[in-house]
Amino acid sequence: METVIGIDLDNTIISFDRILHASASELGLVGRGIPVRKDAVKQAILERHGDRVWHHIQKIAYGLRMEEARLIRGAVPFISECLRSGIRVYIISHKAELVEVNGVRINLRNKAMQFLKKRFIIGSETDRLNEQNIFFEPTRADKLARIAKLRCTHFIDDLEDVFREDGFPETVTKILLGHTTDSSWMTCPTWGKVSQYFFG
Ligand SMILES: [Mg+2]
Image (cartoon, rainbow, N blue to C red; front, side, top):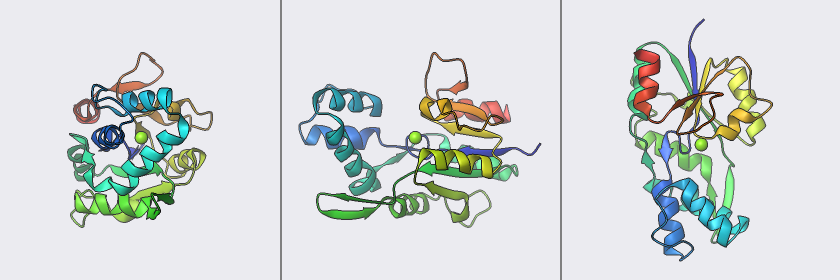
């Protein structure tokens, strides 16, 4: 069977750790001692300030400050290696289209697309993706439907909740980028480990 790899975008290819941490600490919402990690910032904000504030910080990070985001080490070389080897790759992201933050309307999908072009993940070379390989979906259910429709054989995501969804297509191999104690899926703490799995 042909290998088709689907990959999540936010916090799988692009890291928002630093922006989330900076956005929250600049507003005095978390102490500077909080680790520079999305999950740590999220937990601290939810505990002290609740859901609304967490949503606000996310809009700032994924919208207003998107340009400051960083690529996670190894993600782009992996995608390039796949494409050079003739493996199809899709980026499939659950992402709202429009948000309003601090009175500014922002198209989050355009922001993400611009970022991918600027960082040469999208490009005309054979080891770069086309715009047609990028899918933004309005809900998680739509994301799962897209994974099935594109006949992905593997899906790589940073969120275990995605794999736990009832609608996650059964035949797709789940690869978690991160750490877990759950042995229900393959876990790779780094993109180097993902590469090793596919290319040895
Ligand atoms: Mg993600």
